[in-house]
Image (cartoon, rainbow, N blue to C red; front, side, top):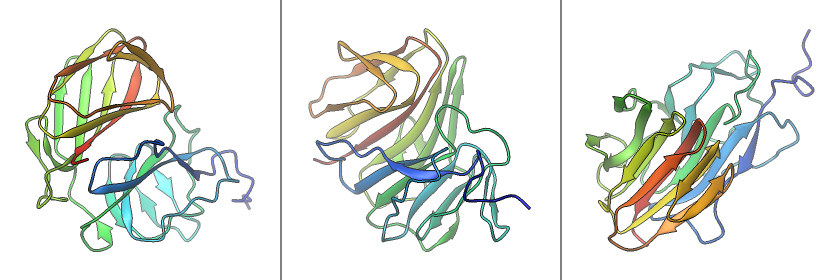
Length: 204
């Protein structure tokens, strides 16, 4: 029998919340990574987006690409080695739907760019999650040398690098780093290598 506590594919929640805070209504951000010793858990229900298929020791499975509202997340496993970005994303926010699976997130595809809108509205898409809030939450994958335009649809915007390296706002950002923008300028994100980004937007 596999020991879930020591499995190389066990995942723990690692905080990604920037020091300067997230735009409202978002309150916390974490990644599920190959770190069985991590103990972070949001006390309130939160969104969990699976980058890789996740499996709980009790047999419940969340497919890759699925979005759920879930209570505290502990003990999740991945049946394959985790990708550099981790197994998934956890987001605490105000006004979430009841606990359970949600509809597939709206998707925007173009050559070298794959965006999933997890909540709110923006990027030419609308989600049923947090529809009453002026906000946006998206995960975007950029191929190397691709350029992404982050338009000022919301008062406060933030880009956080989950994996890879990008050039953004005159800065080079690597995994775990972020940039916050509080003015009405469009800014551009250029992938220096294949990258996975979390884009958040809302109010200050």
